[in-house]
Image 1 (tube, one colour):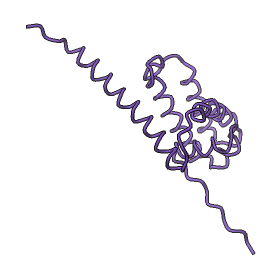
Image 2 (cartoon, one colour; image 1 turned 180 degrees about the vertical axis):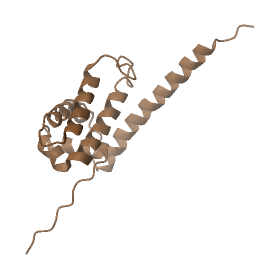
Image 3 (cartoon, one colour; image 1 turned 120 degrees about the vertical axis):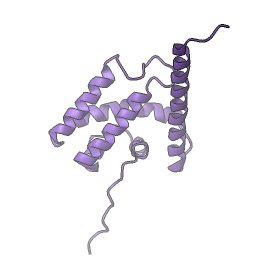
Image 4 (tube, helix red, strand yellow; image 1 turned 30 degrees about the vertical axis):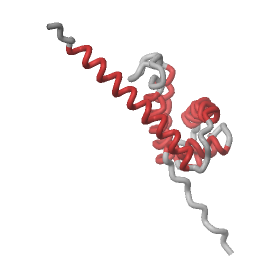
Length: 149
């Protein structure tokens, strides 16, 4: 009787887990778009990527941000540039999942430590793109105070 080696089952398990993560990532993007009351615009989502990279670079070089936050963002930029990733980028669909997750964590970290105004001030894209990023990262916008009379 020919049995399958254990490493093959491990590889199959990893591939299934990665496929599930990819499906979950796509589902989150679709749900977030629908939650904002818009249809899913895949071109707008793809356009969001370069804007977010420019945002992270701008935040990392913004002297108004705390030094620790800037170092964290520089670390993210280095991670995004290096060819070594937790999930290799050449894997279709899921290769960039780790990059996306770490970028969302970095945006939340920057907003928590530098404030929403730093995010808004450094955003290079459209207002709709910022709305999408805020929805994906689940960042709380500051409440606008009513005008004083």
